[in-house]
Image (tube, rainbow, N blue to C red; front, side, top):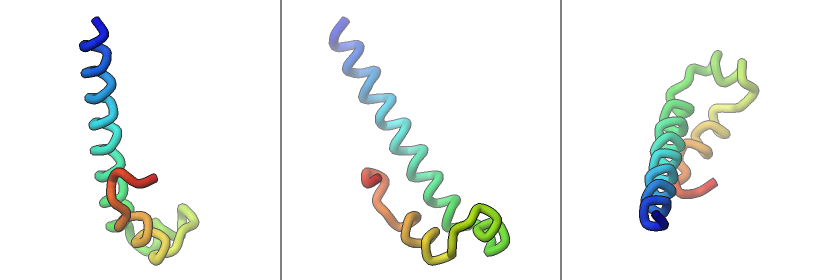
Length: 56
């Protein structure tokens, strides 16, 4: 049972990291209008989007 729990946690973490990577990619592709609407600059979006997926 412990092994199954460890595997489940690893898979959850991998799913989270993949989602973070996709979200950052999408952030960099937003239009200037969309970025302004959510209150961030293009520079902020590029900075966040260029972070490695394992960094907060």
